[in-house]
Image 1 (spheres, helix red, strand yellow):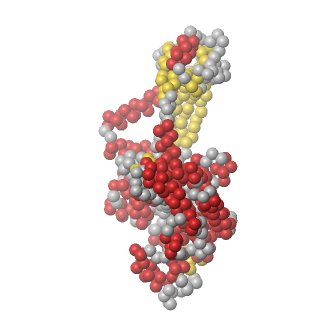
Image 2: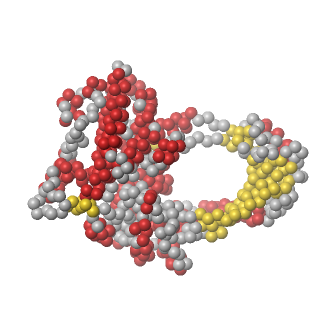
Image 3: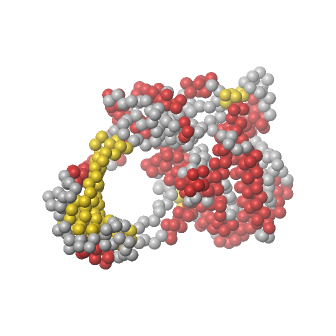
Length: 611
């Protein structure tokens, strides 16, 4: 999209009088660095012997935008244009995509959404960057001790900056608060621990001495409560026992955001590095399309999923994955997943979840270690959905200490896995990773902790309701409140995807819960840009994100002048509007009218106040 000076030379100079800048028709130009490539494509599209054009750009909004720009700039004469929409680059998928290609016009609504996204980012960036730079540039430069400074504003970028600064200031302003909890030791031969918690019949119910329902603000109050309860240690009874079996299904499949977050957590790599690796795996025909927001399969994909599974059975030669597959085959686990939570057409937009294609295993040995790790992660997550749910036996106990004027209650529980189900797949992956990264002593230590949990449930199973029990002693445990944690690059991606969860207004959150901040294809790039222009800093080892002095100064300027640009509400609602254009729920002009009104109102407010 051409800069304003291509419309009028005078617009090279930044001032309030030339704003708001809202063109009636938008100008585009070919970037110099790709002009050679563009010229070749343009000539091919306009060859006289061409009868049909198959559009095979990325299957998504931005891929649609790229073709439409080229088509418009090249003034393509051919009228028979068909859209190839594929989820993987296997030969079968490509041939099927060509065979079932629809008329390009069926994607006009998606193209409208793409053009509007670009116009929105352009108008917000051009107008608000200029307004704030003209009004606040000098004061910003002085604050950050530079000769001059400009302010870069972006629809998504500024909102992300706001999230990072807000989190940093929450942590900076946080004051630790100590609290004191009571932990009782019960039983004779088999001793177990239980935590005191205030209940309605407690002496301390609604007491100002409490920090929360589980602790006291002052140590002296905890000591008083301890002594009060121990005076009645001979009158202790189990008041309630509940036993139940809990089923836990495998997690949903990976989408790009979940994969990026998991890779940042495991490997301390950036979302951009994850996307690059996933793209290579896609191009090597090993994974489906990576830039997806969906965590489920479409019905049509689920009906063919046995092909993916059979391909993994035949092609994968890693021992731990082979053992998982062997168990699946031996136990005859059903692969009919059509009626499960892993298949939901309503939750699939452009593409279904990221899964292995079952092909391309001949490329495995040529992959980097990171690419292998990511590929295996996706396979493991995929195989989990064919295993049965894990089952746990859980026991909850409530113990009452009957005092003369009240009852004080202690609570404990035990949980043990009685059927591994899909956890068998997860555990095999963990075992494989433990072999690589830690020694056997650490593995043994981890197993001991698991044994203690299982022993606890064996103790609790032996009791009955109404049974008297021995209270040995009460220990006062000191706790501290903890602040929020800083975003890392992976958790930031998830926060952007789940913008609806950050919105306080219930109605608005419900309205835009399917719209995040940015898209799966752009979120990593937004963080890179914020780092590149010096608004945030990224610790390469930990992937922790923090704002710079400049970033915080710009945050303060935006907060004081255009606060809504920092909030998820505005950004996510714009994204929701774009989705509504793509699905034909609203007409493009309705979106344009709202956008232009917003730009004009904001800019004119500055001009009217004489800034």
